Image 1 (tube, rainbow, N blue to C red):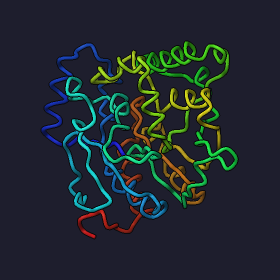
Image 2 (image 1 turned 60 degrees about the vertical axis):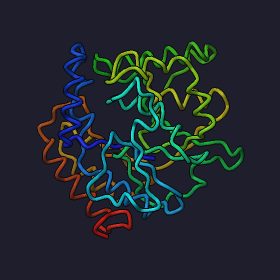
Image 3 (image 1 turned 90 degrees about the vertical axis):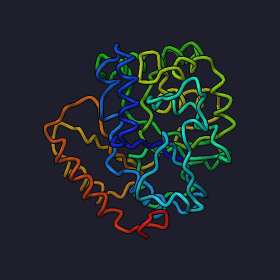
Image 4 (image 1 turned 45 degrees about the vertical axis):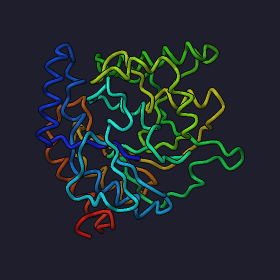
Amino acid sequence: MITWVDDSDSEWIIKKDHYLEKDGNLNDVSKASSRFANHDELKYCLRSIYKYAPWINHIFIVTDNQVPEWLNENHSKISIIDHKEIIKKKYLPVFNSLAIENSLHKIPKLSEYYLYFNDDFFIGSDLKKYMLFDSKTGKIKIFFTKNSIQNTSIAKNSFKKGVLNTIEKLNELFPEYKNETKYWARHVPSLRKKSLEYKKRKLKIFNTTDQSKFRSETDIYDNSVFNHYWGLYNGYYIEGNISSIYIDMMDLKPIENELEFIKNANPVFFTLNDSHYFNSMYKDDNIKNMKEFLEEYFPNTIPWEKNN
């Protein structure tokens, strides 16, 4: 499944701006345009899946009453899932990706095992099923960075407070691991088990996130922190390794060298993330280079595109 938004949709913009005005106390990070930016990454995300993970049975694209203009939504392998199909009416509309993530397991006809993508996640080389499961135990593999959360410099905003809130909740649930150093989960597709998601989402700690239309300091950061440790501490997951590269599109320097490195390294996963922390003077050039890079890396149209 892939979450996606079209930030150029006029109806969506009017709706978002209306609720931004109502929630006037939001900080700049919660309101940052980069949270909703669309540079057609979804097209290349899908191309990467088609090329390097043809074994994936079906693709669910989760949106807010939107469909990419280039997508053949009638293709048998594609389903567009509107927020109202999986999120309670009282919480709609929602612009908080963390809140949306809380309901993804409710997608009708979703398999017991599924991969969760953001639209800026890409598969860079052959992805085999065995890479996602431990060969001895059969447990789901989870992937961490080498960057500890405690030692990471995080902007003083709702993101930092939300992450610290997430760590606090983990420590309350698993006090025996309270003094253990916590590391960021890698920003790559994650394998999930639907029955475990239903079990996890029964925890009351997710209730405040469900109610947050935009990012807030009370949110639980599930995909980047909570999920991995909750599954690891409960014995459902096991730590593994996989080749991946992360590039921040809003880096304070040009990214040509990093993009060239991806070409040479052929990682299983790579991510081209539109960060909300920086206002880079290289933003426009980096986005232009990113688009050219993706078209070169994934040049072939696929059956899910209208012009195929």
